Image (tube, rainbow, N blue to C red; front, side):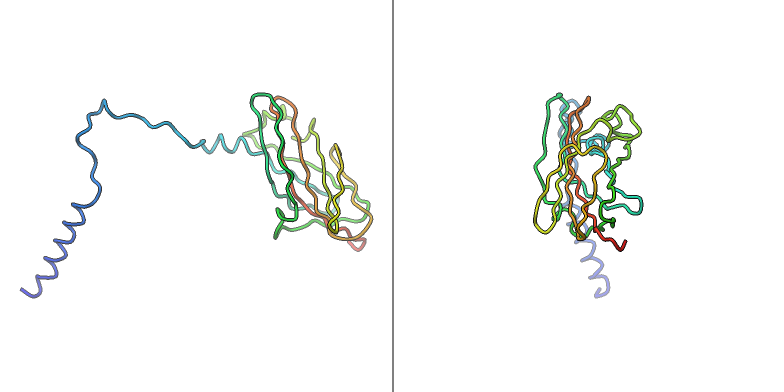
Length: 187
């Protein structure tokens, strides 16, 4: 009897747990079942809304880029993103290296899910506006509509950048990209 007591106790516990577990409703007829609308955007739609990665590069090196705020307006109205401090966005990111006065060029790969934003161009930065804010020793310098390149400063040091890219074609959009370059003549 002593040996069967733990088994009986275990069976009673399992029966109790099963009785307390949620059970499907049996009182609702099939015509009362209603479908719930989707509240989340499917992954493919969400990916379509994210701009592709912008790549700042030189002849010798590439900087890691972090995508910040971005927005799209499907109604054809312009939208704009708020300014972000690239030093905060780049926490722990790898900086590129560049010689003083060298050229920083920009490119952007095409994400097949959002090629409609650029008329399927090979370079998704064509026909865009790129405004760049440079931060060095706490001083901000703004460059408007730089095209696809920017000249690196002459003074050595670590420079942080925030590039604001604006699309003005069939979809109106804007995105912030943060990156940094270490300027050094010893590169």
